[in-house]
Length: 325
Image (tube, rainbow, N blue to C red):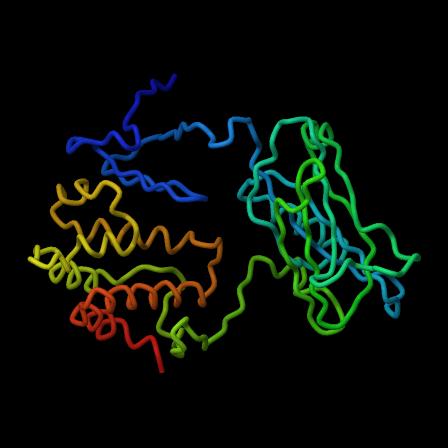
């Protein structure tokens, strides 16, 4: 039996609190120096119980190959780490292609059905064509609650060049609660086979928000500053400055200053802040592509530039290579 005890209440930390909790819209990060099992207990903003779910979209061309129709399957799954892999394995056998997925949403336990509508970005899909199948589907509330397998609905849509589909979904009649889009490519809607979901596209050049070209060959497969680089950064930012352009401003710029006293009690506040930054960067957007990692490093460089700490920016460039060409 595990004996649980309250370790911290967010917002009630003291200088003796043994951990730091970073709350974000889709994640909770816990920093602690002791390994253990942790449970996060909270009250929802909406005082109704809900299940975390998401929608996954796949397409499959309807035989014969000359047909202009395409089957669009939308899966309703609980937000588990392997949910997409399970659907991808099924679609791999069916010859389906992954199109996209929604953000995680709360399926409120209010007895209302989940309504799904597929449309073009600028107009309803199939508008004016009576031969097309309906592009709305309601999944019964009880089906979602009692279903232990893969639940999905299927639409028959027309293939159009560069067509972008949008999926509106919500409970009850309010379909404008959530929307996600699936851009088409070429003559079909598919963006890649289900077998390729685990792989990433190794793009070597991208552009950051300032218009700088990013050299991603200098970026690792995951965001982690080399130990020597981090040690030099800590030596530069740990000493307090009168203008506070030190680790305190870094914490503020990175939005990790909710309880800044936690970092102040550590031998190297900067190291703690960078460790948390690495963790957030690696899980941000659920993407493991080189582009997202390069953008994370570039964002840190821009932060240091905004802080007026060109010396720290130069440390990163000098030790891991230039990130622009």
